[in-house]
Image (cartoon, rainbow, N blue to C red; front, side):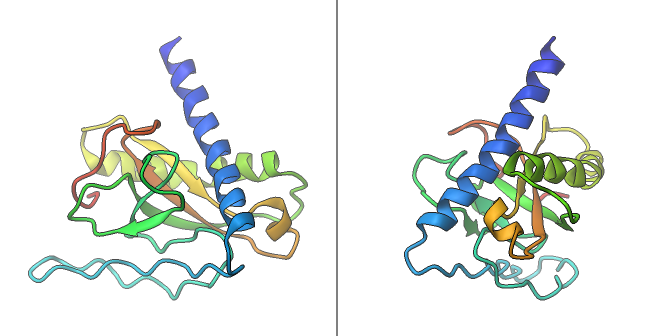
Length: 173
């Protein structure tokens, strides 16, 4: 029963994330949102592989390794924002995926995002060696942007599925 409730919470979180992203894009004042840049690597830290150049999209899109806060998880912000990984943050981008052709609704986009993010989420969950539970948190286009050919999306991992829940305090492993 608990697993079914957790699964429902994860599904609801994913759908809500897509809706929040769509609302943020719709209400964005200048109509253009540049993708967040990854935080600088601290001196002495082992750098992760250089991410591929990120496309400029009108919705939240982050290169893997970017730490971030999300309004669905933090009351003090209204848009998804990149954060330094050394500070308290909601999650970390773990993969970029590309949505398939033929989706016809925001709900279908949400389902496709959750499915595409399953494998990266499972891989990153195993790498953590405990400390969970971990939750998937996908970001992608609304149907309006999908209809314009935008297919890029981000899979993020969090340690909470609710506002003001647990935070990460460093990079994922």
